[in-house]
Length: 384
Ligand SMILES: *Cc1c(COP(=O)(O)O)cnc(C)c1O
Image (cartoon, rainbow, N blue to C red; front, side, top):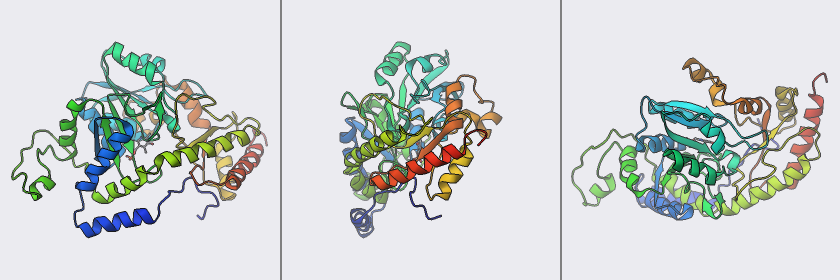
């Protein structure tokens, strides 16, 4: 399908090409100088002491929970309004995800109150997601975390470069997990980063990333080490030098691109206000968001499939972020859903449509999307 307006359009150019050629010519393909430079630059960008590159945010989330020693019998609070990987990471550890609801039909993030409603004596961690790049209320959530003595993992997949009061998301919680998948605000094709403000977790995270081994291939290559021990049950979650080289180029641009996303969202908001019945969430927000996606809530009773089909026929790609995790077959069959705790997430899950958003989107493209949406919604009214 050749879209007139695609859902996303990654910014990749000559600098990325040259970065990749440089890696090939260096003949060192994984866990080398580019990966350590990317980690150092990302730690500075996020103002955390430790940033560990890995091959996805899913791996980052798994490592974060494993570093906190989450295991069977433990519960971890997660939003239902997220990508399934957030909750899957809990299950990889043998623990039980317990779903927390969004605040309202306008604010689609979990809150300290919605988390506290589902905390039990078995809760060992809380994962928050900064949905669409809009910051959760980290002041309140960290106050709750301190009061209950339960660590917080931030899923920052939507929000690299976002902040509250000048402090980056990913630096508030005990650990932060970032994604560099191809449709995220910055990409390494596939890739992730786990950050932590707790330097004592760094060794364990490094062991988890690479088979529990105590020395790196690079150190042995350089003659700094000969043997190694295996001190933990690790995985292979390493990042390649190709991905890290892309990450260095993309990181240098992410703030500028987030600013462009902010302008596109501003244009969208003023146009969408003219379409009867369309609710654009996060009418207000805290901090500096990263504007990852452009979700809207359709009016009640409107046939969403009909709207999305009409948009497709007009050459406009849309998506759904998200079907609530607790409603998926694999969660229902495991006895983990559907959850009675997340009614608002279920309402959003039925009515959300995600519109195209990328930094270089033109005003003409925004007009096309809004006009197609206006027509599609008026044709898909109940009884129309
Ligand atoms: C994309 C995404 C992930 C998973 O990221 P990968 O790098 O593809 O593993 C996790 N959580 C959220 C909220 C995401 O959007």
